[in-house]
Length: 360
Image (cartoon, rainbow, N blue to C red):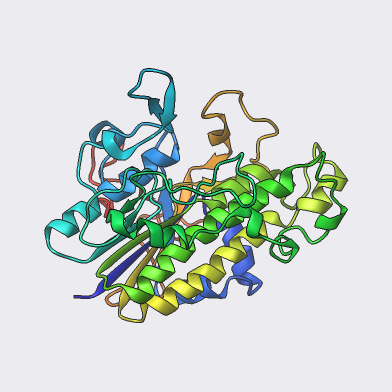
């Protein structure tokens, strides 16, 4: 059987990617696209990431899969907690493949805590999150239920990267003039450090599994593009009038550097996957990088979703994938910047017709 590698880049958008590829700054994705197909992925509404990634994993809409947002009531009755996968009401692709005896691994999918029993390794989305008040030298305990099988927990805990481990050399590609920043009053570098460390932790676990464990299917999810964009898209060129020149000059490279970082990681994943693997790279929605960027964010729990755009990305490469074709193109597809007719995120359409892509 041929292998399948499913890679999730939360909030990735062709409007940012295409100029970077044209400039030769994302060679790994360029090779993926040129050797396969690309298209746009139409998101669901509202564009809330845990809901969307569950639709991608199940091929079902929220009213069927049961994951409706970022949080849920804590069973203790004492407040709310981050969304768990225990409210999911249907099988995900990894459950189905496990039932068929295929070697299946999942890293960081959102939401995937607690880790489910699969025929392989499952690492939940709690894996990379370091406590915000943790100080250097303090123990970084792994949350119970983060890794399946549980006996692998201690090993994978050692692969994590903590923000305190990063140096100026790690930050400089994102903020070349970081030394000019007064970090007592401007905490944005800390945010960048956390995003990089979280992302590197996910990549560390994923590459170890690809290199050292038997596998038929691998799903790995990176949320860093979404975090880079929510924190720093306001500084992305061209400068908006309400953004100060000083902030623009300091942070204008963060988003593009975040994409380039992902391209480097993609290159390693492709190298480990090999030519006989079908690779699918997708995002759950896009992110406005242009004049559609909002000047302010509504003060409500899901307010930042206003920055999301309705079209994410999809690119595929591997055995049986025709090169140079627009994914899911229809004869009646309109011509626009990307010739691919957008495919809906999960099965079905708003008008009851079957989608061009009924999910995984």
